[in-house]
Image (cartoon, rainbow, N blue to C red; front, side, top):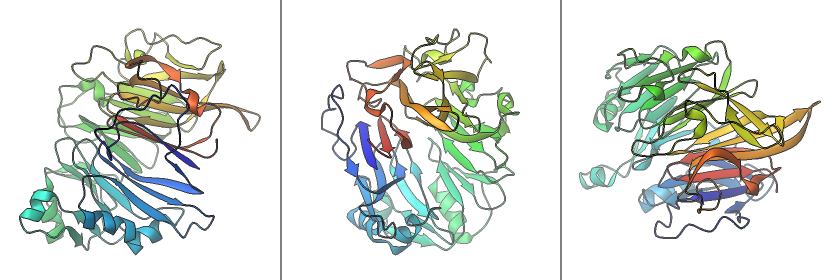
Length: 386
């Protein structure tokens, strides 16, 4: 496998963006690569250079943690054992647009990495709470969304969340959903949860951007279903900035949201007239007759209808991995990108500051994508070959 990185480099903020008009060089080559966490300012990568996947290197890349916290990630036997399994039993959490990684969960505990201010106040750099919490997400205001077995609850900051961990109580700022999410994500305004039946639900505490919900705002802060997708089995959701995407079991791609406030340009398929794609090209388009909020997109690779299998969204940019399937065989593959590219985060030349219509990214033509991750102004891509 190979790991590629585009856009802002959190490990070297002062470095200039490389000229991606030439073929990119992989950041890492390994037999197996897993992206455990990514934000605008840091990432955690697990990889092995041999076929023995029980022997892994776990790297923290960034500047948000202390050296002791970074060493904990690299040396923890619990983390190494978890990532050696097919189903990873740990889940990192944090703020993708603020301080970065904040900790991780195991089946029996929550490990928190204290912030600089908390350490100065006397907290240990690494705190362990013996409590089973399946999933944690942070919103843009610093609130914590927690899934602990009987639904999703909300805490309005770390102090209240820590009180919950220390007391092992169920006191929170309110229950947002009665179900356990199969997958969920947050962006600047909205939280999106995918339940185990393949239905999508959204929630917000900021009603100023109703398009980001993908549904009508009802004055509730709880999760409510996206009606447009009620008859569709969704298998993946992704979110960032002011956009959210969903991929169905049939390889359909759905997108909703808006441009970042203050930006004059937006991804064309979200506009009133959508974007028209050529029947002979590799492109993503939207028919003019569409739902007011959720856009069902037409994805073509080399002029043929394509099956979407991965999508990632950063702060204003979107990447889509798609392939053409015929008689059980894959005949063509592509990665397409649109949106902000001022840091080269799309893997396209930075002369294209903004890409309105989705374009194929030449670096990944024909390659099988193992994972797309977009956070902030950066993109990570894992390929299986090439």
